[in-house]
Length: 405
Image (cartoon, rainbow, N blue to C red; front, side, top):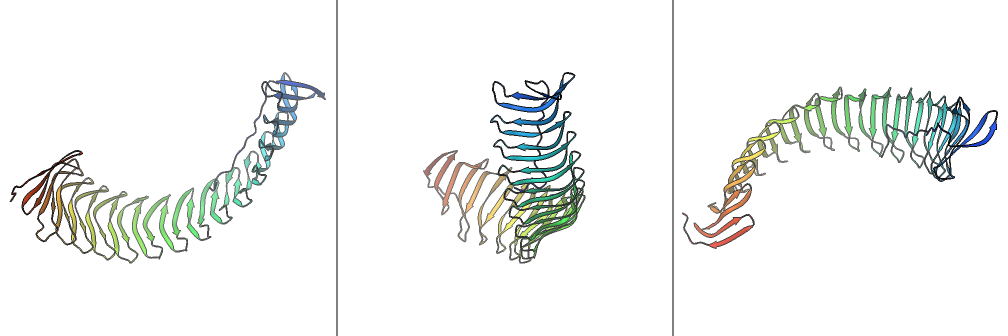
């Protein structure tokens, strides 16, 4: 994963206070102080310094160790202030960082390394903050990012690269915020996103491209929000979506197209929700569905059609749920079944019809809360042939021989 906007930060562990151990090297009032891990003879910390008014002042060389005795930090203090070049190590002994300090703050060149020894990051600190060019590398030596800093803030051109070395992003920074030209690329080198940023937000026209270079989407941004006409395209370059945004939300006419140019879906949006009449069509242009939305929920009568233009099903919705009597048809126009929905679930008697030309009922099924429940009558030649009783998971079949019409 690319680490676009951050670099690894490391901090020195500064230890001061009561001296736990003292060896007797005294020269010009400077002594060497040592501290050990608890209940151990393993050295933890060793530094040069002196005692002034009862306080231990670090002054001179300083070393801090891991429990395995490998060096963890090495540098120097001047009058208790971190100063000069410091080396920070991994526990295995390999160099982790080289940092320059002045008066207790980072000042000068900074370099970080991977445990393998490969360079990870390099930059310059000025009075405690990054200033100038800062480079990061992948462990194999490929550049990961190049950015510029001014007084601790990213400022100027920023480039981010794929692990393979190809350019991933080109971004203009202004005092820590993305401002100006903004580009993002595919691994193949083709442009993916092309636009402008203002104080970290998209501004003006943003274009998105397919990897082959054809335009995929195009919209206009104002204060970080889509505004006005918005277009999306098939990979062939043919129009796929025409829509409109107001302050970042879909509003007004919305149309989707098949690649052959025929309308797929058409309707209206209000505050990012479908509203009013919506229609959809098959690729040949024949009507597929027609109905209304209210606050993004199907509402009122909806009709679904077969590709040949005949009705497939028809009924009403109430707040997104099928409601009332619904009719289902076969492609030849005969009725397949009908029945009632209550709150989106089948309820009461549902009638199934034959496929023959007379299209007579062949069975009646009782539903309760969307599940068959109670008697189911099988019908043939105007007579009961079977009476099926369904209660939950129980099913009982009894022979009948009674006329019903």
